[in-house]
Image (cartoon, rainbow over all chains, first blue to last red):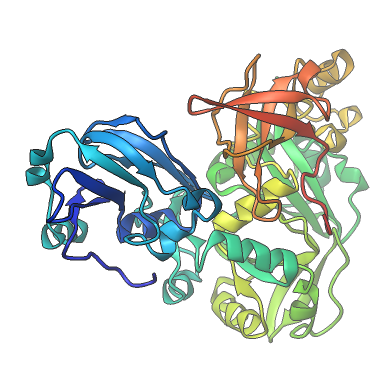
Length: 132
Length: 359
């Protein structure tokens, strides 16, 4: 994806992570990194996820994503327990570049405190942080 | 995250070209340089398979001329400068008395008593001062030539063909330098590079650089950034100053004994001889990770040692690197364990270079 994009239906963490929470299921979220993060990092060549069952703490690193040049921590926008990881990224980490909000999702979590979402940004507010 | 540098950074004559090509620019040793255009991996593979072009105008140049120029350089540089013929190129290190490496350098002999030495951007000022200090009392002129030259590296199996097409006469052989007219510009063209591929490096007047760049790109050279330059050089185990070379270690430890001729009496030669004779305690080993994981500079090696360069090799598609390890662990085939941010990654020491043409 070569053009910047920040879908309106996602919640954003200022450390360039997104969370998708379906209206029908407020207990779970899908997490990934934003267009800005993947663009800054360059071609992702390695995604090192935690194991299913790992506990995530909001604002803390739960995984690493690497480009040829650099390593970057992936920050948890919400707290919870990992129930699924995107196994296909092991063979095709570039999906994080190509489709950061779709096929490039990283983990699904069972939220320990769904109210934490109140602190996340909407697309307009996140985009505003990038302008500065 | 990579942020664009502030405007206080120095810019090369090709800065506008990089911006127009959509490069990501980073602060590299005080210069605002392109780290990548389209992507490190594809730029890397373009150099391995056809031809890439790099702006390396941030590199410095020191001109040394006069009757005592050979004597001064023989005293400063680790290689045998007397053996450098007219139009020749020579690699060497600049050492302190204790053999700590101050820089690694290419020196071109442009005339009977006239030499041009290419420095690393981060060391240029210190190198220049070192040259000038040691020139005291000699009949020699040491000139800072950094503002006189832009430098383009054209590298890859098709690089000579691309450069030849705009040259007024045949290109110099490997490790040789000649004056040429390239697309009408007077340049120094050198059969050298930092990628493990054939190719040339072009020293041009700053005002001619953009025209040359455009002409070479038009003829098929792919713009490549410092990111690809780093992965290319690491695959063939060329040293990067600040990573694999520093004042903390000497050239023997770094595997650069081949460019040290202690009998010339260069500064540091006694210390170098001592380490060569006794055998170094540590050696710079090239290794490959077995399985997943990408080693990075600073990762510890279990049992002693530290990674000085690491990346994912775009050609080999595996984590590779170089590490200073105890000499007993430096032989090819030795199994290592690299601590990549808390995860122990098995690795094996390999012969240098890690990448060979056709492998």
